[in-house]
Image 1 (cartoon, rainbow, N blue to C red):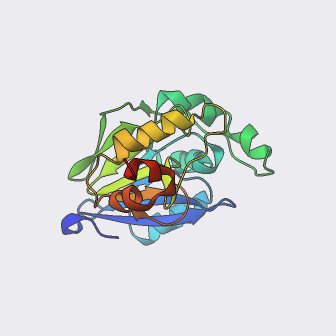
Image 2 (image 1 turned 120 degrees about the horizontal axis):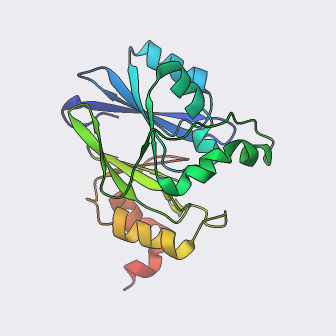
Length: 218
């Protein structure tokens, strides 16, 4: 996928037994990269960066569930890149190893964030910046990162579905409100990169996501 004027490129790498989407965002001008939700297979992610000649400068966490943070520690140790996450999910990040073990999955300990982000914050990257939207519901500290026509939504909303709300800290009313107020108010052409499964767009989900059928009948 290519951003406007090819300033950015987005590569989605499904990793780990749950095939979580790790997104590598590269800035063509500086050859720097930001990695969003490195959930597993840290060595493979580092190899991908090396093959493309990219220097990792930021690790962005959409939420603290184990399948989204399993390789954060390795990438931090090997590259020194700064970790960004919302304060509401720091405890989930601390518990990632224990949570993974309940599924029979080994997860390395996750270091604390270098920077805490909140709604409306920006993280400079390349010629622009990621904008942070606080989009809770799947977890208390779930966030969406916006950049150049992409929205990295974690497990908030999927192509034709929505994120789980039955895990600790989840809330269906809160999740639905986050999608309606923070995602569906974006331009229809914004590309949604979810934590699992294929990409979609804001417009497509507004028109066809079955969880919002009631909204369309109003």
